[in-house]
Length: 493
Ligand SMILES: *Cc1c(COP(=O)(O)O)cnc(C)c1O
Image (tube, rainbow, N blue to C red; front, side):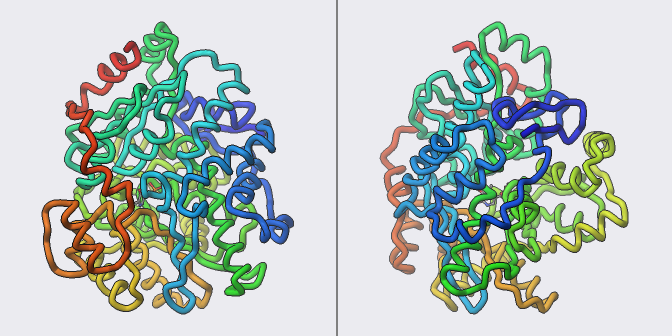
């Protein structure tokens, strides 16, 4: 299947190329030429396990990958999850379900894509004849960094460099990254926020000077962020899997519509849901949940995306984002795949920090999406209420989504079953979760985790308890102007 750039100047002949390149040379994002329809396959997918469903969904785009090999790569990736189930659905109330995506090696939903991406990229490089070493650049708001490091550590022919906002991630997230093992990895703090990291990385991708310099070292760049289609495509699978699980448990009938609520930052997770819908999965609404950085809530309400606003540091740091990269893929679809218009809007965003969609587009987007946000106090309240009412311990990102799901249900009166995506383990944010459920503030993240375990009887994952004794290998913090130098030096090492 061919892949085209959202900004139109560039196309590649297959997914293998789109995945190894990561970002298009014109600065746009690669999108599939069309969406394969799986409606007729849903029934046969009921009896499949998670890995088999994933191979089916992913394989429908990655037509040049060998199907059997892809299936065995999926089985290997998802065997790394607790009990081999990458995405269990948990019922927490009548008609309300939580899709738990945090049972992988680094306790965040990013694991679902990043346990598989090394295979997709290595194979993609083989298929498209890439002979150079690959340097993966990652900008992270906390969770992508660790998940990508774990996925790519010690892979021959691949190096990985992660940039994170030095003061913008949780203690546990920082510790997870700074203690990373592997001889091909680099972790660097940047004085700034996630948007600064992401902008710096995107700039490096589109600079022909840097490409030339790296080429002299026999290195090409790629991305493990959700701007890479290879990151996005494994995320489509869990929408299918959750749906099929609900049919199997008798909660819904095959063909019945359900809604999803997604805690959103860079718009990669929810976009995968939109893609699932385009592939024929019976989805009603997609609810886009934001924290106090509510640029998306406003966009869905007003039709204007305005990133020129105050940036808030919240207890859901993986959503502290003002420039949601993957929204570009949505507005490309909304515009009827008008790449010139998409390019113009992205240019406006770069120049003036904003762009608007038309009234017709706004109407169309409102039929598919609902958006809401919640502030810090409400987030704490939801964590507390959910724990008291259903014994369920939600992390702050999941809590933001639970709140939006409730607002949607109250405002729309819609009776569809609702699945809320749970994107991280509460233990990654132990201090804030503990404070929300008990009112107690314990500064030490491990002591807070201990108290939380006692209180909730929800066991501390070993990935968290093991962190304490691990050596801190990476302590470098740089200015955002130093990212290019850092990348070139690491590439030459
Ligand atoms: C990355 C992340 C999000 C946001 O996902 P996007 O794909 O960037 O919208 C939400 N919650 C957690 C815990 C995350 O790590």
